[in-house]
Amino acid sequence: MKTKTLKKNKVNVVTLGCSKNIFDSEVMMAQLQANKFEVEHEAQQDDSEIVIINTCGFIDNAKQESIDTILRYADAKNEGLVSKVYVTGCLSERYKEDLVKEIPEVDAFFGTRELPRLMKTLKADYKQELVGERLLTTPSHFAYFKIAEGCDRPCSFCAIPLMRGKHVSTPMEDLVKQAKSLAAQGVKELMLIAQDLTYYGLDIYKKRALADLLNALADVEGIEWIRLHYAYPSGFPMDALEVMRERDNICNYLDIPLQHGSTNMLKAMRRGITREKTEELIKNIRETVPGIAIRTTLIAGYPGETEEDFQEMYDFVEQSRFDRLGIFTYSHEENTHAHNFEDDVPEEVKRERADKIMELQAGISYELNQEKIGNTYKVLFDRIEGDYFIGRSEFDSPEVDNEVLVLKTDENYVRIGDYADVKITNADHYDLYGEVVN
Image (tube, rainbow, N blue to C red; front, side, top):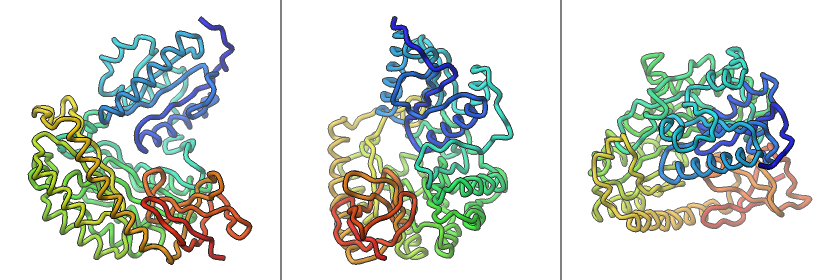
């Protein structure tokens, strides 16, 4: 075993998976810092006494990445590079008993709602007065903003309710207070996240209250963009879109995972909607908010998916012309309803179908981007890369969507975290190029 001087009370938090996990890690880091721990997020150096891994357990690839990361730090512990390894998050919630047996080097495993127990294990206080406080891991001008936890939807393929529990909305007054705190720190953009945004308020206000929440958040001084992620299509609250249309600081952007374009598959997936109703919803969304950018996510190779079902999905994508689209290959998850069925679509067929959809979408994205040439957009700049300032328009979320690239020149100078008007001069499949309009 190597001997190494580890920084006592230094914690390295490693986050895997989605934006909900990033949010949870940021809350955990605020609690650790308040307890006088020195905290880093995904530290480059192995000099931390303690490593906490916030895992993802969503689909096979994500689970494997989480396991590989745990094993990496278990080895680091055996080599004396860290003293303690703790694991939290979705994988730990779902497979705790198996993980305890398989990776004994880990000092303790915690579920998705066990932050107080984790703090107690570290001989630290869980500070109630800090609820809602976070140490941001994103650039300081934007933040993920979780408005609810858990999910009540019965989707057949999804293990999230097993890991995150039933839907629980955060009270509106708490969210407004959090938004004001973030704005005071210099945050300009809030990305609203939840397992299902559209269910917000049903548990505590006995009605869908997303529209009311949007109005309240749009009133917070300093918040210039509010962006909606992860909306469920069945029973969609159209009044939220009316608020989007009326309020300048709510981005004309909607992330609405639709999962498939075949009624047969939607029924098998227990999505509570048909292709016809989905098409009607998309039409209504676009009529209510002209120019809205719609991002969606689909699944290829669900059990029983025939060539005809896939062709229906292909035709649906071709017809719908989504601004942004991602597609997963189906992952056969234990204890889900779909696990009762045979995973009968071969992996290579799943991959082939997903690739065909992405090839189609690349063409659609290219055509839509060409139409933007000559237009001027308000752009928020996130970073510098090589010779370019890199930012996003209101139609783009970080990491998953298009970016706007502006060549660094004396005339094109911008500050990171600031907005600038950019005229688009060129475009490819997924990026726009432009010049600052002074």
